[in-house]
Length: 205
Image (cartoon, rainbow, N blue to C red):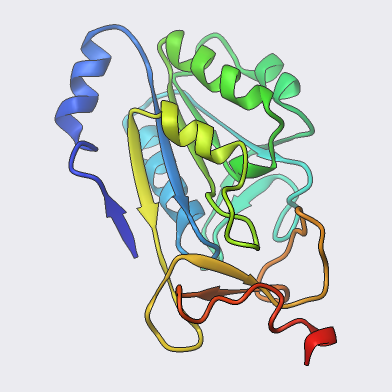
């Protein structure tokens, strides 16, 4: 389930391009909400438009592939795994027009300045990531990226408990670590009513 705010439209994007500057698009939501799928869709369209595209992902995310970003539905797109924002910036080519970044919440704080820098250089930057952590709190640096983005897309999943619109990522295994990479083996999509941090971990049953 994907919702785009009214100001996120092609006419506004065309004006930005005419002004000679780039812009930032952020796709944010819970797990299983289609963030990576939407990112892949936009990157594919950019390639069809014969734009030069580079895609990056954090090395820590190797759930489905080491060198591809992948949606939970099975869609993939080649990417470059990096261990830091500095490494990513060093790999951006001069001719690159579109920069895609998946799992933005796993990048260091330098990603904020990097995204601004890339947009200021005339590039279109598309970042996808979780806006909340497993406790339901803002997942830094995504909130900051949302604040500087020209275009924001909020995605939603379906609650596995009741079928309502899900906006939270329920961790279902026992861990207090902020970063715990996983998929359906460790997380479920939950609505506001059904989301209870740690309620389903083995030690609580």
